[in-house]
Length: 284
Image (cartoon, rainbow, N blue to C red; front, side, top):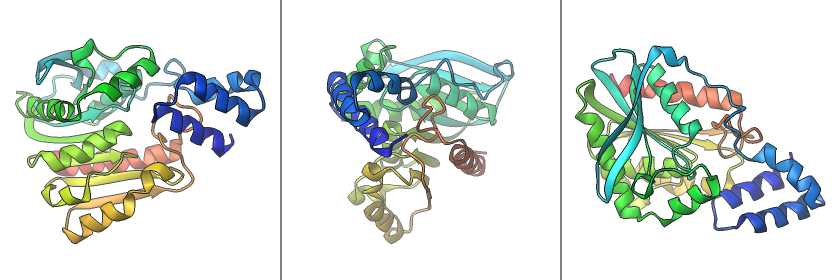
């Protein structure tokens, strides 16, 4: 698919561009509305078509709640069956909320031997809606300071679980990648933070980071990658423990197997292996 079309979709999913405006721009790029509409299924997430990578029979799962800053926080928790003394990982969704894909990612983390929690940032407003555009709008309305504190409380919740060992990491994707960077800055007790194609924390805050960082970037993701040089320089200057990987010729959201146009199996598997290796090293 033409990279201009993928870039337009990326702009649509990360800006206030309305669906009507997006379709109009897409029609111009493709040569007509009819062609544009046939392109949509290739661009939009298709949860039904994606194959789960996990055997659910080997996991214990539940919906959990805890007190947040502005109401009850809810999340999907998974762990190996009868698992005890487990390292814990907070899984942070993209800007479409806690959807079926993020729940599957949470299961994947659990299947690797961890206590995994996919937290819903939209808990206080009733939870993630099925309409992805509505979810994106609601994510955009969140108070950043309150939202950050709710995720910090999520880390605290995992530390206090009787089936955990007290060690906690996080992994976030896109919007959640940004949150992973912010948690590394704002939680001095975090052991490891992994950010997939997420915007970087402010360089002035880098000295606060105590966690081991792993940063995954897509080579074609110009919007996010523009912040890499300054962030990496600050990490180097402050002697932070970090690993940074750029996957050539792949797009933003390359890990999302429900996004047929942007998913890249080879890059996703390589990045995932590196992520799990870090968690096993830091959370065991």
